[in-house]
Image 1: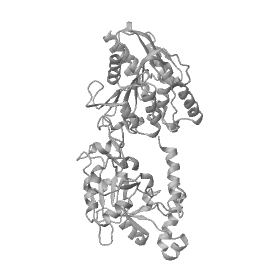
Image 2: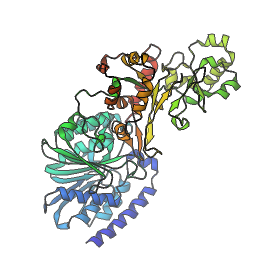
Image 3: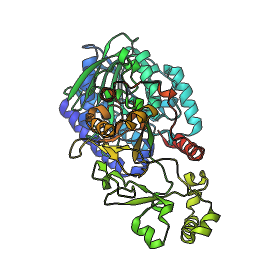
Image 4: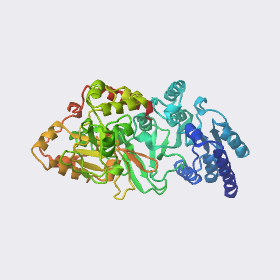
Length: 541
């Protein structure tokens, strides 16, 4: 039986490779077509067998079967006498028709149809699926509305319009499951962190019994042509209980690198599930966070870095007035030191010295006072830079957001495979240089500013303490992508435990974040801020 299964799997793999070659990577990306590797599929089915009652008949459903990697693994793991029914859906006939031919004599019913339109038949006790990873901007507006309505009817999930198609597959499949049926979903781990994933997490806590979440090491990308960090989510279709959920990380389902059990009560209060199993459950009893001490902003978005950011040599060669520019730190890969010291004029004493065009004069005033700069602006207009999204929402179009020099900056993106193993760096900025949006700018709150005024060494001590935060302490608040790329947004950095800073400031009064004024807000920044918000609504997943 195994020899026959192995031979069929070899045929399937050859078929998969041939069919993949007939499509471009862009086409497969748009449709979210990433086949599950054989070893992983078999590991998943073996784990499924450990969750099902011994000897129980299996009624198997794969809502996005592709060429049948999970069905192939099902045949290898379960004796054929235990498989009472097997149903798979495949929308794309490019894969579905050859797969139907491959499995026609092996007991699989393969429907060439869109699972999201199918009427549910609730008698499947094993749902295993690697759903299509179709991002929301590839879904038509009408489809989104239809999917949202059907998903809510099937599972109670109110899915955001920013959610990927895989979230709907999870919700729609609920209506196909028997009571106490088992589901295993191989999906992007991003749902554990992003806002649109909240509906999925609420479903896992409120409608079913969440059993196990295994997250793969992001440096070990499961799909060679898809840079996503993957997770396997296991649950039973049964009312939730007050129990602990198994969280594992790295390795395999059966032999993970790290394991931790987390109560559903703790999960209900935790916004970022990717903290587990590396981090412990944290108390929500008023422990100070970095946002109690710093207001954190993304660095400024210029609208066109190559035009607005120039080197000293470029400024001099064009005869541009240096007074129209403000110093700006280079990107992290060009800034090797973690402390930026100033020159006599306050500009950074570093090797790669860059300056940002940021002048508030009108074009008429610039024409009269700085003709070479006016010519440079005209050159920008010839290149239609003033029509770019951010520039067109600023007045004047060449002005910049209000980002004064931050005393501490944190890198925004990073990998854990750096020499010191730290994906993020805190940089002490003693210069008057501002930063672009590859950094997070950290500005002391009003109360911390008062403490700094009376203690000249305090900022350095705070910076040293920030750099003592363990990588896990930062990674646990951020998000991660396939290949091990980590990212921190301002709110995520602000959520990092900062009890160690409170020890430096024993008389510091922790106030509600909402009561702290926006130290950087001004009328000039609002158009660009609103433009950025609109842009994020149309681009984020």
